[in-house]
Amino acid sequence: MKKFASAAVALAVAGTAHAWGPQGHGLVAFMAEANLQPAAKAEIRRLLALENVKGLDDIASWADDFRSKNPQTGPFHFVDIPLAAAAYDEQRDCHYDKDMRRVPEATCVVAKIVENVRVLGDRGKGDPERLIALKYLVHLVGDIHQPMHAADNGDRGGNGVGASYFGQATNLHAVWDGGIIEKQYGWKLGPNFSYDHVAVGNAAQEMNAQITPQQRAAWRPRSTVLEGTIAEWANESHALAPLAYIGVPTVTWAGWEAQYQEAFWPVTRTQLQKASVRLASMLNLALHAPDACPSAEDYPAFYIGPYVGPEDMLPPASYAQDFYCAALFRGTKYPKGFVGVFGSSAIGSKSALPDPQLAAANDRLYAGIYEFAKKWTAARGTDYPILTGAGPGLMRAANEGAVDAGGASIGYTTYYDGPQHDYHAAFQKRTDGKLLVTDGLIFTSDVARETALLSHSKVIVVAPGGSGTGWELFQALDTLRNKQLSSAPMLLVGENRHWVTFCDFVDDMHARGTMAREKFDAVVRRVDDLQGLDGVVAAVLDPQTGEQAFRALPVCRGTPKP
Image (cartoon, rainbow, N blue to C red; front, side):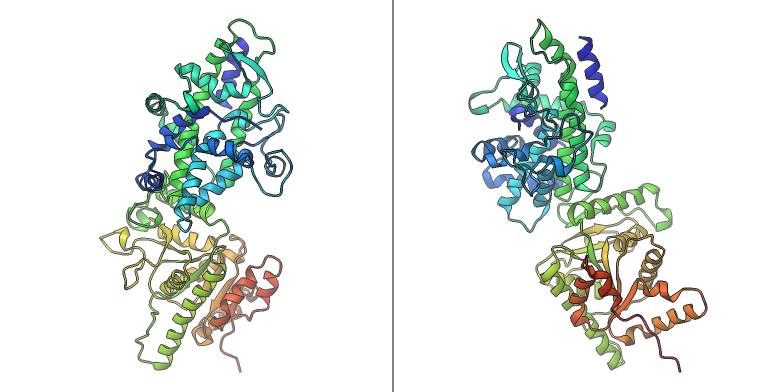
């Protein structure tokens, strides 16, 4: 008994069969569904209705059924991390087909969870494809928490380790799949792997109630990089696997099963509880309702930070939530980043300025930003969507161009509506009432918003603007030249008449020794011709030739000196 007891304590702190079995997957599904945010629950019910299904427990074992008819999907359910290895290694562990031959693509459970989170969260995908992704997620998040699905000792994840468990000839993998759970509750599978959903649902309700708030907080995703989060789960399960082998006899003795059950049921229960918390978090995240990032069913914002008050009155928690949810949004949904477009909120599609030349220049500028965003989104928007501050003027031009191209139109905004503070007014609308932003964030803090706008942009396109644009321009300039922000080319776009005074200011700072011109020119270039801006942005984003293309652009020059 001592061997099992010490192993259980260690477990508490620290090619295969079907993980957990139908009852185990049902437990995870029932608990996860109880912890969905309203927006996520509504979308899941809508998708399930496509097949007249009501609950996640009804689809929890679909992936196993599908696998029985499509064996090529077998590797999706596990990751064979060598038992003696320290941790998951994607190149070593995640590139095998059903016959365990090396393949170029990533096929293991870690990669497939990431893939299906993104498919489920992509509203541009068809509902049937998103429903399949949901089915996989409900199952695979359970799989990755079964220790025998994250380790291999040359025995197909414990399938080759024979044992008799309470009189039934079986193997170590099967003991963890269902043997421990079935013994604990006295359950037996019916024909065609059917089970008593009412009994499992009642057990799940009790098990879910036992999870403390501290455990929920500790088990939720900690990383804002989706791949890293799932890899952590695999490593946790892998760390448990060696201890699961302890005491498994090659020759049984009387009572060993009871000792094993007593030692490892608490571990099994914890893994099921972890899987449920994390499955709920993944579903909430994919469906715009992450646990720590409030959202609303009637609005496209991934995150709606609550209005708390003026910037100088915000508590530290508001900044922490803003930064966390922004990093989560970018890291899980748009990992490559954005093309950020900054510019005046006052320059509309038809200028009312009394000076006809200035009015015409502003009109050309608005039309040029619109056409750039439209062309860019059609060609490259899947990789690097357009991001703006979601306001009027030139921001609207960029968002509208992206929407009219049929792609993603991203907005980061905050509360500007005086005492109303209604998030419904945060994103600009077209005259037909349709939103110009298809996805985005509403920040509690404007400082956090501005920081995220810049740090999430892989290219910073700055059109002429007022004090707000000036703040963003100099914030970007200072963080770039001091290497506090990863390299992001900054392009000042539009006709020279819009920029000559600003460039005079730069020349004056250089002349007075307050800013080195070479540091400014190292991060800022000018683009006069908006018609070719999409080609310029594509060139500077090229990983091979981007730096050369950027340096070939003209620098900012003021009024020629006599």
